Image 1: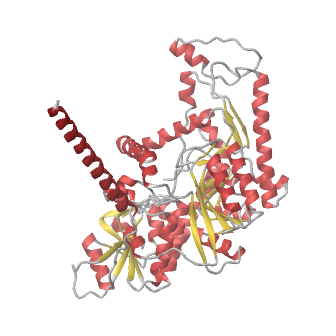
Image 2 (image 1 turned 90 degrees about the horizontal axis):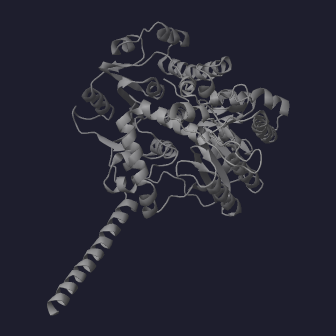
Image 3 (image 1 turned 90 degrees about the vertical axis):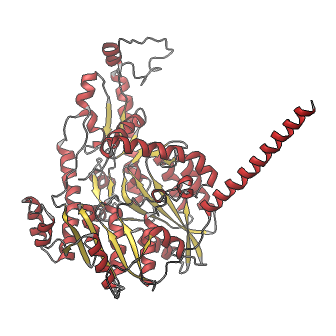
Length: 586
């Protein structure tokens, strides 16, 4: 017995020691993950902006990634990058920017914000050197702002024009004997088109030609201005397929030189007035620069809340990458009642989603603007439900390349009866207490009366949507109907037809909010607020890792298809204010 107790207490003591050690180790991890340790950047520094990084609306948070120092999970937000570039303009330690512009993982509106920030940086007379081994058109759009733009001798510049396509599923649904049963309002409402057509309708082809043409014209215009070339000539280069090699790009004036990586670094050294080539350059990554400087405003007059609404709009609680009605209703209400918040900037980057959730958020925005200024800033996409939640702000800003509008509604009620019976040999039967008790069950087609019910609901929501826009934009209902119909517009055209007030960046929207609130020296605070370390660890890590692994395994294009199929499932049975599946431009 004495031996037993001896062993028992020894094991117990070991367990206690291990638990205590575990607590200290975990505390160390938390401290390392959450500490804001300052970084020294030194002198003659060159800030590195790599467009291959996707600068999301909010900084990507992953506690495990921060602990193991995985750069893929330590990428600053788009607005942080813009603010850092602006801060670097007056920072004497920063002598220039090295812009890596081969692949650009950012959207067209985000690229525009980055380009404008870089253009402002150039006013300081500091240099920007851009380089890419194989430069994509979206990378080239930002890269042309540089003082010098170089390409790898064996690489090239993509210059073939833009294209945009959609995946059509109707043929597959017909073979499977699945009827989608689609109801929609708005002749341009093409979100359901892949389920009911085998190719583009004329209406969708028209709207796509217009907005895609606007994006392409923007590329041609900025290139012509930066490279001192003619837009007509640039267009013909694409039409004729004239740019096939890096040497073609150089000969035709699209780049300043063909250089290998070491030669580009030597060119940067010469701009730094280095004594000799091959010296080590003090390159500073954005993540390090963020820890080294105070680039966010810290004024004392008042606080401006920046609310990020990025992702699909969904009912209820939703997930971290969605705009959920419960979370945003409570958040906006909290900011409305907070006297320390003097203005709200609502950053919208959403293709829409649930019409009901959109109306819930719209209501809170409407109440908030009665108490304090509310300014909307549109990102890459603020369409359909994304426009619904934006239309009643005091002022609405969009980038020239923003995709917006898409004022329309649809609903999908699938019928799987033939698929189950003829393909799987499965049949259904039930007892019901009323004629419409099993309406939308999916195992039988809707009858004519039920179809009228669904179409009537869609038409009613569409009318409400147009009414919200008419009142928010102070436009006649007939006029709103003429520019609605589910049609997609670029930010430039949206400003011309009155859907937005100004073409401008996120910073322009913040400046506007400060003026409206009469704040000269303000500070900003961003919402939804950052989650705690353990909450991030429990909620985000498993999900983010699984997504990354699947995407890496099946490929980027296949991942897009998978996401489209997932979106179809989310749409079923819920009236949607959503734009076409994906704005995919190649």
